[in-house]
Image (cartoon, rainbow, N blue to C red; front, side, top):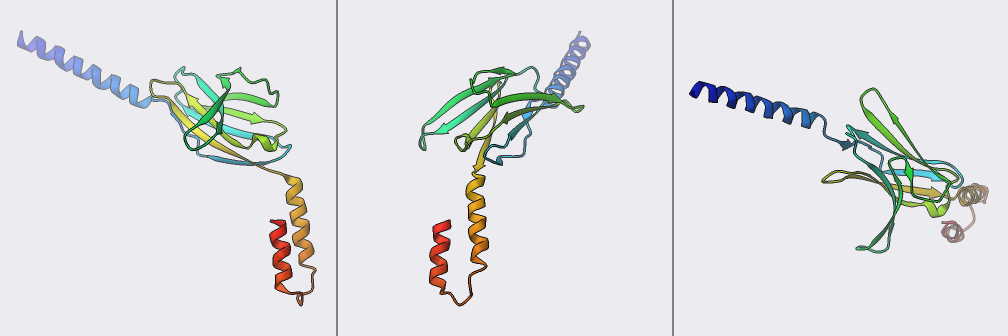
Length: 173
């Protein structure tokens, strides 16, 4: 009888170890590496949330407005492919590669300066897994004016006082 109990114990232990190995190998994780995305006004911004082993968990995209150090407003954009925003410029695509990585790409078309800020991709679980992205939007018309000013400064005679140049540079920045 002792031998039978030992065999059951070894089989049970083997089963527990195998289940734990399976769980470790299939744990969900967000593996995106890009935290900051920079784009220009009227261009398309692409925020890519790369998920390994999603395991049928829900993916949520949100826009986050920081009010102060302790308060924030969160606007729900998507849950999976279901859209919760009325903005037609927001689009979500999902593709899966051969390594079981899912690319949940939030695209913002015709980007406005007001789109600048934080966006969050969350993988629903008992302990949710999240990735925060910062979208930086550059006004291309301002940059073009700045570049024109800098190029015109190079044409100024070097005998001009440095104080005058400093004032112009401070004005353009």
